[in-house]
Image 1: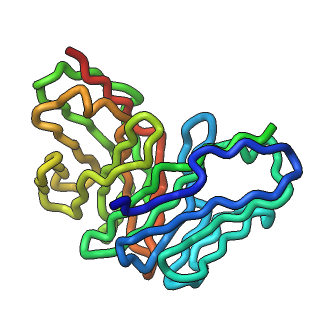
Image 2: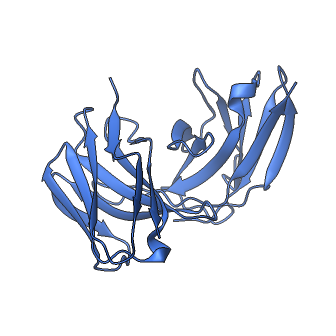
Length: 112
Length: 112
């Protein structure tokens, strides 16, 4: 069983479109995250939700809107896509005594 | 969260121990040292963490100096599958979420 899964794995789209990336975790964790890894491989946190409540928002343009329908899911919707949004987006969840973060396989977004 | 400094790259022969250093001279008393690795654009994977005592698990050992200003991750018998970027991260829990601030990491190349 995959602990943290993301769909789609690859996403190619035109500038100006709106797209969503889905994330699901089956670890029973309360906290989920979205990270962005750009072409230079820097990995930066974007958002964090705890029990469906937004608790971290790292100066991300408001074209990015996370949505957590329940604590096992954290989706990322992006409006009016720009070239600079091209990156790999990783979802993660955390919990348990070590509070380690488990990452999904990533979604490679390419904006043309 | 405290900043960390790591060498950009290291090589290690397969079967030998890989010792990856990390400086975190501004670490605070309540901050932990975490190590993650990222294998070829997969999602980052937790390795180990510690506060002030040395730690060992099935993957690696973590040696933290007495003043806590530096640490070393040890992979006792490196294999080709250990080739990855290794990130040393210092963090404290911020309530229910704990964001990870990734640096540039050390690219470890394990060779035959």
